[in-house]
Length: 128
Image 1 (cartoon, rainbow, N blue to C red):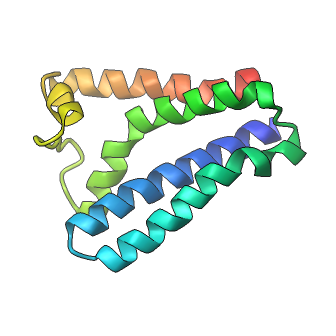
Image 2: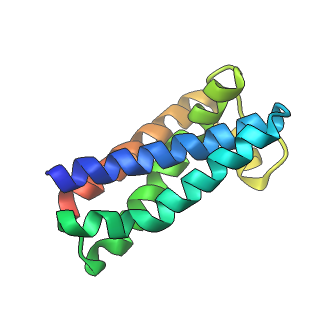
């Protein structure tokens, strides 16, 4: 239980930092964005090893990565929009992922985010 909570905390902090990095870089605050990016990458690379004393085993690394991926797909745009002061439902138009998400109706985006978020939150408690 403790391992799952710590793992989720690390993942969500890293995702928030990643979204803030992109938002700060887009707003012209590149120095702040780059500094946060360094911290975020160090946390992501080191997190499995920081969790090993709590009981994370190498066989859990795939589940940890899957949890990160699902939570990123679920929450990144929301964190980015908050950091950049966009409407919460804003979806970009430049990247292929943005265009794919924009093709989904707004109510479908919330369902998609909810389902992926629940799956991403559930993995650490199921596998760790």
